[in-house]
Structure formats: structure tokens, C-alpha cells
Image (tube, rainbow, N blue to C red; front, side, top):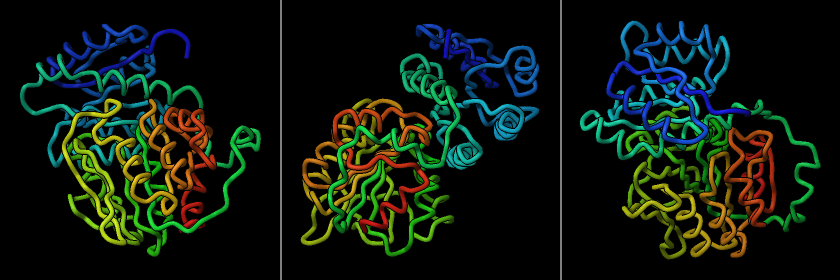
Amino acid sequence: MTGPIRVLIVDDSAVVRQVLSARLRENPGIDVAGAVADPIFAMEHMNKSWPDVVVLDLEMPRMDGLTFLRKIMEVRPTPVVICSTLTQRGAEKSMEALAAGAVAVIEKPQSGLKKFMETDSGDIVAAVRAAAATGKRPRRMTPAAPAAVATLPPPRPKTRVNLVAIGTSTGGTQALEMVLTALHPGVPGVVVVQHMPEKFTAAFSARLDTMCRVHVREARDGDPVVPGQVLVAPGGRHLEVQRMDTRYRVRVFDGPPVNRHRPSVDVLFRSVAKVAGPDALGVIMTGMGDDGARGLLEMHKAGAYTVAQDEATCVVYGMPREAVALGAVDRETPLSTIAEVIHQHG
């Protein structure tokens, strides 16, 4: 992308439009092309000048954000960041938005909105940059050309594992859906960190549980890791794996952000490296930044088999790229084959 990222803000709150516009304009390389109160005004604006990224509220007059999102994806697919309230309804609608093609969901509180936007808008800025990166090229779900993996070391011998750890961020909700819906009920226990705000992970897990043959739910402190079950780290809390005699359980706990994230993929991967070693398989998928790359390297050094989603099928080839650059990856593979790789080793 050449030139600044052109952002259109669509939110019926004048406070959000004002404060978010100011915060985004403070960042080099971001230009607020417009800030409007509802999707009708947004369509008028977009007919004149199409933005690179849309920051979209879901609850608005005249037309709701989800309907507008679907219209955008029909007419001209564009990176969309959802800015949603921390309510059960907001979480459920946000999951629908991600399924409809939104890149990311950012939380906004029901009270103290101005203070929140002024002091905690870093995630929104990062989400806008990540969303803009997804518009650089189309995603491809077919296998990459052999040259794309030529720099990787030769694969190590296959071993059977009894634990699978997956980490992902931007674009990960759709990627996880593709992987988890392809898993059979006998798969080893799976633990997942998906960068997502607090309260949204419960709705995300519940939605996946209705779609998958494996059981998917938000993790609770002390939950055992068992075959045929996927435990998703709660938004706003870290998750690590502990050994329980010959089995594993999860610890869900508070703590400072790691790599700007809570939950952090590095926290999960490092714990798996420590307690499971060669009995685990690690998967790092689409996402901006480098969270999980060093943790995956620790898993690799501990003897775990490690996999990265390839560049061609990533929404944002950030976290996998960093893991590959560190030498942490045994195999780089398209999204469509990750479930198959898990089955081969499980």
C-alpha cells in the first residue's frame, strides 16, 4: 500500500467519532478520510471516495452495522474493524461480523467512553494497521508453490503427540473455524490462544461448538486437557498448560500483557514447551506482530513438532513469518492442510 491508510469511521456516537478521529490522526501513516453517524451517510461517502479501512459500530440507527458490513463485502470487500460494546449482545453480533468478513473486533465500554478512547486506543490503532495489511493482496487457500517453503529445514520424523497448542491473532477467527471444523472427535486435546477482547471469547467458543465435531469452549482454571476437546483462552486472561500426573490441565490467570497481549501466545507456548516437550504439536497462524514466535522456538527446541500457516493463506503474515525467521518451524503449510497435519501427528 502506498500513501497513508485512509480510514472511514462509522459510529453514531459523536464522542467516539471525535476522539477516535483525533487519536488516529496522531499516528503517522493514518489519515481519517471521514467520520459519519450511520451506514447511509457512509455509503454516500464511499461512493465518492473508497477508504482502505472501515472502523464500524454495530448498533446504529437507520441501518445496523452487520447489515452494512455484508453490503460492503458484496460490493467491494474491504478490511473492516468492528468497534463493539462489552455486552453479551455485542459479543454475539461481533462473532457474526467476523463470520461475515470483518478482520478484527475492538472493545469499547458502555461507560467512561471518552476516557477509554483517549487512554486505551492503542489496540484500535494496531487493528487499523493490521486491517490495512490484509488489503495488500488476496488470500489464497490452495497450497503454496514449493519455493515458498524452500528455506525451511527438512521436516523431522513424525511423532505421535497428546497435546496441540494453537496461537493466532488477526484473521484467526476464520482460520480457526476452518481448522477446528475439520478435526475429528479423537484428536488430542487442543488449547488455543486467539487474541480477542474479554467476553468475546465465550461467544466465539460457543459458536464454534455448534459447528465442530470436537467440543469447543472457553477455558476455566483447572480444566483438564482431554482428547476431542478444544479449550480457548478467555479474553483478558493468560492461559498456560500444567502437568497433572500423566495428564495435563490448564491454568487461567491474571497478569501483565506479554507482547502487548493478554492472553499471549508466548505464555501458552512456553508452558507447553516446559511440561510437554516432544509430546506436543505447536501451530502458529495468521496474525500481526511476533507474539508466539519465541514461544514456538522454545517448543521446537524442546522436541515438539512445530507448524506455521503459510504466507499465501494468511490474512496477515506476521506471527508465522517471525517464527520462520527464528528457525522455530518444522513445516510451513496452507491453512487448508493444518487439520490434516494435526491428524497425522495425533
